[in-house]
Image (cartoon, rainbow, N blue to C red):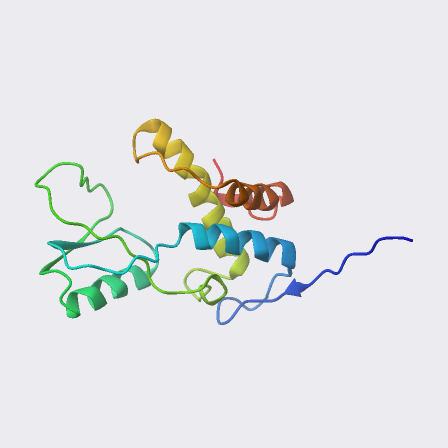
Amino acid sequence: MIPYFTFVLLFVCGEAKDHCPVIPSLHIDAALKIWNYLRINDQPVKGDIIIALGSHDVRVAERAAELWHDRYAEYILFSGKSGNLTRGQKCKICVTSPNINLLDYPNKELGDLADVITTVLGDMQRMGFYAKSGYQTFQRIADDVWSAFSILRRSGMYNGHLV
């Protein structure tokens, strides 16, 4: 008997682009594994300041404004360009993310799902590099998340942001 494989292909573009890349279900599953690892699902807590890390995604600023309007902190600090937040007074900080699913994340500004997966893959790779360079603390990443990373990297389809 010859084994066969079912290949599900997904088209997720939304308003992102005029064309829509075909992404195999194996890649979607791997990207979702990494996305769910990187996403911060902590409940926000009140603190001294809301820090919005510089991003080309305006939803980061929108989330910071939402938290400020909900009175999670009195101040908002938007980082970017050459800012350095490693010096200064200690304050309470809560880290959170916009509550957006990977498949809902593509938009006109960020691109289609393949573009988002490419960015996420680069972010994942740099976590190890940044920890080794002292830019962030070391974080243990589960084997299944690294396996998902390897699947996507080996495909060669999403390597545009790898170093």
